[in-house]
Amino acid sequence: MQHNHSSYKPLITILCFIMLGTLILPAINPYNYMQNFMGLFLIIFSYFKIINLNEFAQAFRQYDPLGKLLRPYSKLYPFVELALGLAFLTSLNLQLTGVITAIISGLGAFGIYQTIRNKQIIECACLGMVFKLPLSKVSLLENLVMCGMAIWLVVS
Image (tube, rainbow, N blue to C red):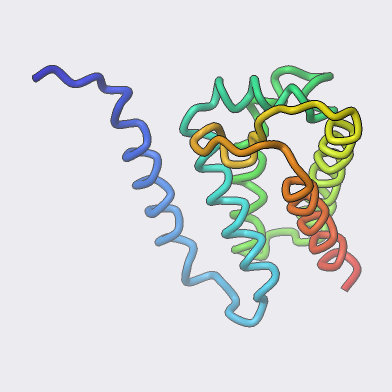
């Protein structure tokens, strides 16, 4: 039986994330719950986007203001999300990490709000396109909470 090598992409990606997690776990400060939550959230959500990067980017451009303006940003976004997650987990330059997270989450929330307000019915790209979810108030809340937590980390 002949196998398509691309069918192993999810498995290889999962193993890479596990290896990354194994390398950084000793650096996690167990008392920074919000920071750790944000880091793990961003890493796991980036994984789902990276699985099918092209389909994610196409869906993301439908509502993200920066994705609409700069097409390459749509393909870069999951890797930015991954880098931010790793930065949160390792406490790497938390001020800058928080500011960048607040900006991209805020922009995302703005784009989602506009889409909902205009009554457009499209799929949310938040979990890549692995799970088919509608863009909704839940998506908006997700972005607003991440933005709020990032701002909280910056000012505290």
